[in-house]
Image (cartoon, rainbow, N blue to C red; front, side, top):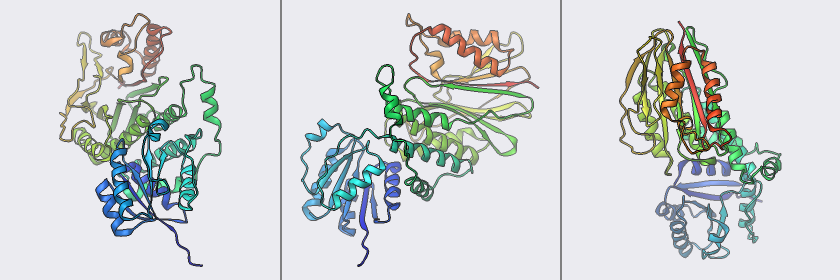
Length: 438
């Protein structure tokens, strides 16, 4: 008996989801990818060329466009099975008129295992009822491992290629978690019922992106902390070894919450690592390349603020750019010199393609301290609704700059805790303290 794999085409407007779907299908021995498309028009043309058994459509927030393509395809090739990947609610899905037997809608929360099973049911002509699964943890573990593999690639100093992504995701497709009940149980026991599997996994991605430890540089004292809020917002920091014994320091904040922000953070961090290696002494060029890649690979509304500095430890000279991020504080050890605010030198990343950043230079002398932070510090609120603010932060640094980097981090967190009292924190807090000691 001849072996005939299921011939599948994928049409999706977001590259990371299209590549992920393609790689998942390629990992199945009884399935074959016969083509990819990036929009509805290409999907119709693709069907005319390869006549797939199944067409998977995934157009972000554009279910109406997807349905139009579906009707056009079914009118010409009624035997093609069409699957719409949707983030709509069950109520919204119920209002959509589908050609029963030929078109199906599967909600994006489904796990990889559940999706493959559903795909096989559909192609065998078996009627399925798609329920919102309670086992999203399978998908989340898969995404978490993908992030870890992407980080491993970026550490090699190269940009993950399409082939890299496909190999990474393909190998992960068979490494699904067996512990299906762990996160639903945590969710049920959450104190206010609002903690979801998505936010738990977002927090795990966030923590796994962070470096294990601070670099040990002669003549420098470095410390960093990140405390996530109940709903993670995508803060991260990183230390990047560069050519000629230089080091890159980055702190950033994705302007959203949940799994989407965590994945966006992972993408941003990977791109910064890659382009930092490509432009080791030109942080403005690095940010420009990161910005263009973010805009080309994503089509959402998220963006990221970032401060990126390249340090020459031997001279104390720092080249930096500030992409719409809260200004780091440079505290001089020289009495009466004051505190310099390293204000934004350009827009946040992911807003406009032709953005530019001015690259600036500062020099740290022994005893100087540079405090990098995210807006969770200055926007922390007390029970009366007042913000901690920039001035309090400046006053704090004036009185503590003589301490070690680790003590500065610890005492600033203690000061914020005292200020906010029992008020719930609305945002992550990330700190990086760089002090020149010799």
